[in-house]
Length: 229
Image 1 (tube, rainbow, N blue to C red):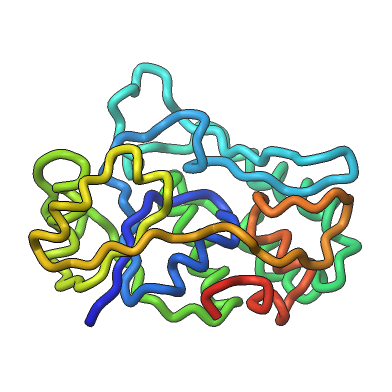
Image 2: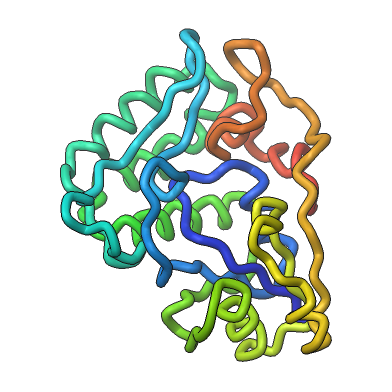
């Protein structure tokens, strides 16, 4: 039995993204698909006393409408300092910020990576380590993909020997579950509802923010507010 999930790399994703990683044996970063603007690839949200704030990594998109996610480059390296300043300003008073400060500060201030997806991968690996997630992480470029959307996903599943594929509800717009049934691969739909609230600054409570919010506020207790642990 082998469970897998296939999802594009996101920047400092929310807790549901990491629940999905923790639920599978292999998590494939699906970065050979087209980069989509104004999406989660290069941005995410944090809490502030003035409401939710978007942290966005600037990327080169002019004249690159067909570029893949793994081809997308950073357009201004000043983002690192700006984002760390925002995190410092808004989370310095949380219970666990000091505990994780050095880990994330070095990721931001010492980051010289120019490819967006590799930056995302650095943060995902770091958060996995903090949460104790040991799932194998691979890249879609490691596998051959053919056909349309569902067929590409199926081809990866077959190559890794998957018996179960776990995916988020957004995929229902295009996903052809019958193709997986024909290959005897079970499809499980992720349920992101009914998460418990935790100690969060700046009410009202907001679930859809970066995992960093949960880590800085709850630290070693973060997994108690997730579903897969």
